[in-house]
Amino acid sequence: MTEAALIVLSCLASLVVAFVTARMTAHNDLARLREEMKLDYSVESAIRHLLENENYQKRSLKKIRHHLRGFSDDDALRQALVRAGAVAFSGDGDNEMWGLVSRNREDFR
Image (cartoon, rainbow, N blue to C red; front, side, top):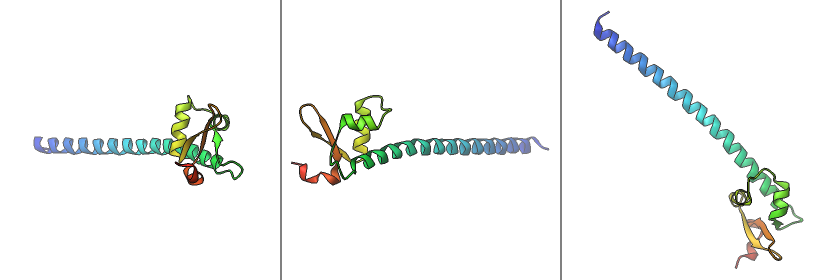
């Protein structure tokens, strides 16, 4: 083989290795992202289920925190509530109430 053919062959081998590596990295990143989104979706689904209960139009943050454990702080729980379509309302005293926008339109002023 000539020197030029060896150079071309080594360049092609490098391209194949780079392509395979990039493809595997993209596949792993996509799988990781799917897992993260699955968790986010399940949290939002649980929040909606809790707030769609026909017996309660609104729930206190304390009661929601009781049912949805595992949040590091109240702000993380509040962010999840907002992603699920909930808004905050003032309750009795310092009681923070949360409800779905779709079920509490009459309370917006």
